[in-house]
Image: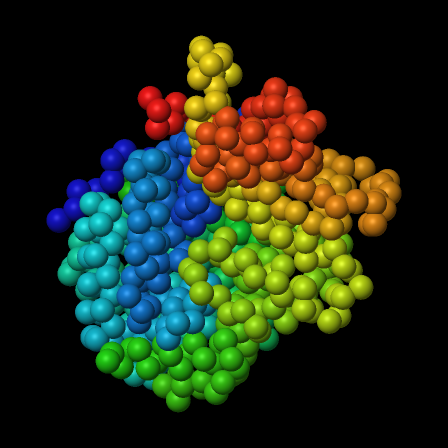
Length: 280
Length: 260
């Protein structure tokens, strides 16, 4: 269907690049496998895009969206699609990804990543929209599993089964966020092993890792903390079952010094290396 | 209509307007009740919009303090729900909102500072354009100057205020010292927003220069703009204005208009 992105991401650890680190990264050009940025921060072009294009000269870039609303019940936002297309043309990213979530209904927009019931109807709806995005961009889209704080009584399948069927129908890839899965295990009682078994390993093109916080017993996907030990353990298990993939460290609030992010990336890199030895 | 539509609609009303959530949502989880989850989503919604406003209006936030800013944005968010998936579009109405916001009425300059900050926010994301090459302009025979149509950089914005908003803005930039004195009734101000490479800057414009820039922006030739400006401001200094606007990266290109 859609050829994989070219150039591809190296199978190493990268970091989510955010505004507080632009200057330092461009000045020092630290050793980073690759970087990922949030699409919407560059939609207007202007100064941010100018910076990103300079970054792109030195690192492979992956574009990660937070606003497409693949499962929203309102039509796909044409302006959003056009802006993403324009950004892809300018940046020539190695990967383009979005979340398996919704953000708009009935004229309301909720700038968040929201869960929906995993029904056959929703599957057809999301598959149509993923296809629409891929056709517009002329490339494969990676779809990321979601961290959720609640679930629906009338879901007809698990998120893993939903994603597996989505890739089969559309040829999209999967961005496997290991921390999101861990959050769902703890919050919703999702079976991690069943999730890993449900998704086709060959469709998984990238991993995400991050830290969470807790509120009144609920784990919240705040990306404001180093990766927890339990998530590293789950990541190791995922590496063994699915294989080695480019792995991103995400940090989005209380953003620490670049060196902290790089130390986290080094930990992911070490596990990729160890696992490579164990499968070799 | 999709059944999915009803689920999402109920969920959206529960988040944005605090309505009861859908009966289709599981009510209890291992470690918390559904009400906790719903409250997290409501907080995320408001928190993300608050952060978007804090990003677009850093000077307003400094002027009123973090607590008042949180209170003010909460009221604003209740009146102006998000309409765009791109958070950088959120908050254009803040200046208008502040004009009518009773608890901030003593800060008479606040709405105008918000207007200036939104202009800066838009300038930051405006398309890039190569600044005017003055040497290229020098190749035009002087007798053709009056026919020149000048192009203005997409980041360029002009904000007029009865208060010295440019000075207020400059005093609250990260590099500015904290020792400043601004007399609020000192003067009206015409603030010129532009972007040089990646940096948004604010300068002050003289009335005559602002008139001329306004005429140029409306698309008339340099000759017509200069004549109309001189008629109102006999002291208008065209070479000085040109030099200043080129230095600020306001002018980007030119052509010789319809007569060529």
